[in-house]
Length: 541
Image (cartoon, rainbow, N blue to C red; front, side, top):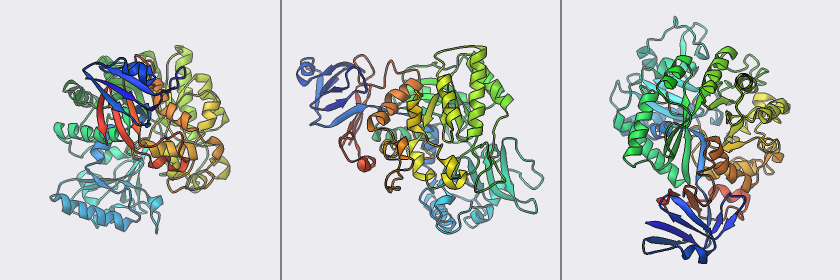
């Protein structure tokens, strides 16, 4: 059945035809965009007509960086995101074990705690805190950022770790004065624990992805650019690709998936390339995207790699996951094999390194339309932004990070350096291509709170009143454009999606309120009434 939408306020994000009142869809493509009369003229007995009654329609949202499989997996863990103390973590996890009837010896996993939200002592939990939950279950609780986890004594014992265990390059685990492990693992040291967690079953992974897609559709998402390799114990790139292809073949994908391929070793990258994979392999439902590299950690965990020591912990500059030589080799190999790269870089130090690697690859093998990018791009300066512009590097940004980070950034960096962060408007002013997303499950997958943060520069409670660094606010139009067309550009797909344009894929969203007219502070509360993917309604409130 074909579909017609009439009596709407359709913001197309197509600069040549920005506003329309109706759209006709035939099969999975946009057939015609225009006025009610001319659109209704195209209908026949097989057409469904939807009267929008003045509602706003925008292109389907495209989250430019998140973890779909990890989010689906997280939905079956204990959610610690609202915990305001270590005691609350302990009690909530105990309740979870009881509610799920988890037998002794079986793993217990949780995610979402953030020590900066604790109301009393703002410290990381330790193995000894988790031992109060259980000493018979191996327990691993991951910080909201995903760059730190805490394990209890049972998990540490099962991993065979002790005071003789050597530190890991590109990571760190904490020890006490006697050398005893405290159960806190950072960056590459996470694998000391994660590697022994039993793999979920194939059908459980499929269910996790399907559960995540249902949620994503309800928030107006029709496309995601997702980093899934290595997220789940036992699921390497071959297994992840197999699962997605099976879901695609069975018609169960309700999102278009562009896989950001986490392959942090040259051995893995070469194996991937030799298997015939590369950027663009696949189709409009599931496609291989860039090489994804995790260059540093997070600001909240003080593992983001800085040029200068942390203002609130001068003993550290964060953690670099790669040396410059390692990063150069990975980027060069990807680039020379026509692969796009997307490098996680929060701190300014790793950003300089990442841009240097990209520049070296481009100098050796020039390519205009490379669409290499940096993910997060939080702690910048004028020289970095100029280099982004010069090299035409994409900035994958997550405005929702402002909700938490505006409360810690001055503390972590100092007041002056903090002024050079989350520079969204400056990026646009320098003609840097930006693509918006959430990094879910680090932050919720919800689109509207992210747009709210982009246009108000406030946290979700409305602080500060005038916005933090208000000169870096985006307009509503800029935020939506770069959540649709900007993200489509990042996946080389701006020619087939990202705007409501005749001939493009019929992906669009109907909103409950007019996002272009409401007070900016209320944008976070706007809901999605309908999500359309390829002409099919995949969510209807």
